[in-house]
Image (cartoon, rainbow, N blue to C red):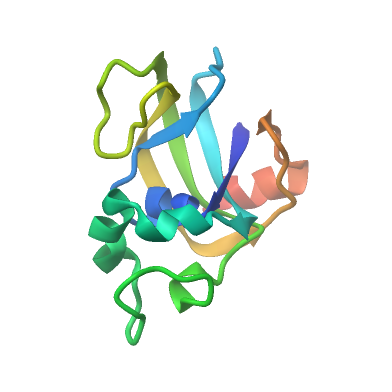
Length: 142
């Protein structure tokens, strides 16, 4: 299994909403199980993204505001694996994968996303990385 660190709130949209395309500036030949790791940082531009705003009801908890913010309870889990998915395709943008796929990016397409009942704390990394043996063991038990 490999893992991909994704900034909040995008990782949460993969785990708990319908985001099945992650945008990267680089491709990978890897296909297979993928741990979706929420990084510690927050993408401030995400708060105004129409696709994320549309997905907000799937992400928001009771009492959350109308749009995502760094202090929303729904985004408390960071620095942790939130879900396991299957990475099935990576391709250059061809005006596809909307609304999540971005122009001039590589689209990493995931299926079979299974959110974890409890986030698994893990230290993330740049690029595609291998979770530690103890994190893999916890993920396999779920």
